Image 1 (cartoon, rainbow, N blue to C red):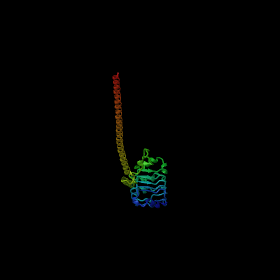
Image 2 (image 1 turned 180 degrees about the horizontal axis):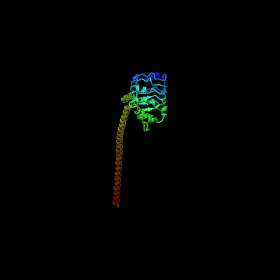
Image 3 (image 1 turned 90 degrees about the vertical axis):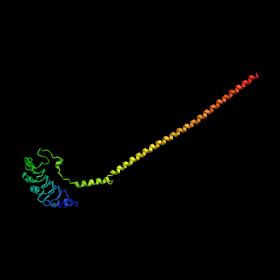
Image 4 (image 1 turned 135 degrees about the vertical axis):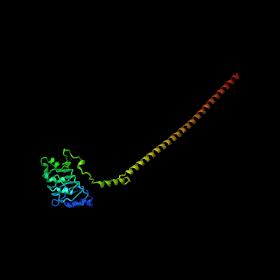
Length: 269
């Protein structure tokens, strides 16, 4: 796919001024030059042109807000003065895997006053004696060369990223709006969960009340049973007392009868 068509696809119905990040890796450049990229990309901060067959960056438009440029695995050997002219605010430049042979070819980068990180992996220039010392001396504004500072300390993740490039600001804003909508009950269901918890609590309270009521009913029933038992026992006791009284009266009557008969026998004698 050629570079012009790739740029058209990457726009995705957006205008060039809406684009902050543009990745054109592995597409085909026309005659080793950039094509289809215009100064209309006024807000572009990240541009990647890895392995597109570039031999020159002469057709690069002026991109005043560009911070990071990826040009690795191309065939660039000179002409870096265009970068300082067209990209005044560039902070990260990757030229790894190009045809740069001499320290002198890097001299135009001195004009990039904001350049913080430069990568030259797999370029012939890295084979020169005192390569690192020479580059740091030539470009005093540099903090990192090939990922390491002058003291051979590796760049941290935050240093390796472009400062102030927030490609996903708009997307994060949309996510926050969606989260607000979710609180109304449409999205993640958090409000629904709270309502369900409240319903569960109400059910638990009802169950507790039913248990208390049932317990009171049981106590009332138990009391009635005890009263019934007491009542029955009382009747039985009364009947037993009546029988005992009858037996005593019968015994007394028989005793009086025997005594009367004895008296009659004595009179006859």
